[in-house]
Image (tube, rainbow, N blue to C red; front, top):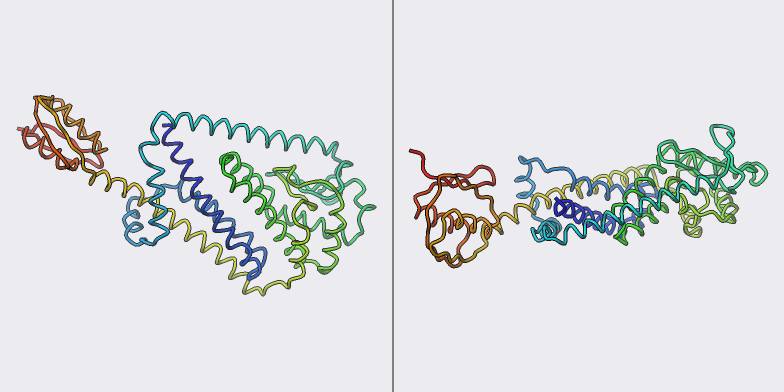
Length: 388
């Protein structure tokens, strides 16, 4: 059981890491070609590929997948998945590794929950504000806090601290986060971190997701507002003087953050891509995610098939002298990695010496010499005496 769970965890880590590397290569070119919102959509490649591993491949589709997709990425991925699925994972070390992973995941989850609660407590008493917002005396810039029911929190002195046009842009930014469900995305990212706490690529990816998230909201607010890019950049600069960090709140979004301000302002200088380019970019990201799921599903289907073929073709030797027939059959099953069910009426002893034979060849030799019959039921081979 522990080996199976460990196998799934290793596969998920492999597939998600590969998806992160693909996004890392494509996010900047796509950002300049189709806009920041299309680049943010590119991150769906990660959960899409993870879902492809978790969902079972239908039996009637497996042959189609394995026969139609023989590309280098699929073959390489299936080879690694087959290695991850090796029965060696069922050794005693699997339980130890799984225990260490569980401890790390629990510690990471406890740390993130404690940090979220500490941040919410640090806000102090919240006072209901206008248009569904809440006010806090202990913050200096607007933020979105929570996951399922995210709330916009603004400073108590919001009206005196910022100019009216800056307030409009800041609130529009947080509302955009709220409408897009970005706080929930960050919460799912925190869950991903708990599962993959050992993977350094996840820490890097979460930072880049938040940055692309901010760029996408910047572009959305600028496109909707009539105040212009210059005033939006001024609002960013005025808020950047405060000291809060978005990384302090796992489930939420923050107007001011530790993201590179220079790059955010540089993106504001670029003209928005045409609608056709933005749509093409978004469609391309979705298509890439679908293709990624297809490759992973095909590789996932090829891995067991390649393992079965390797097990069938694997050759071994048997040297048994005056040994119980049932024991010899069990020996063949173990060496061949196959499921063999021996009937209760099988008995007698046999002396057999075979070299460089496959499990099927060895099984045929033993069963024919003893007058036994075999039949296959799925992946199980049944050996029994002939019915009279």
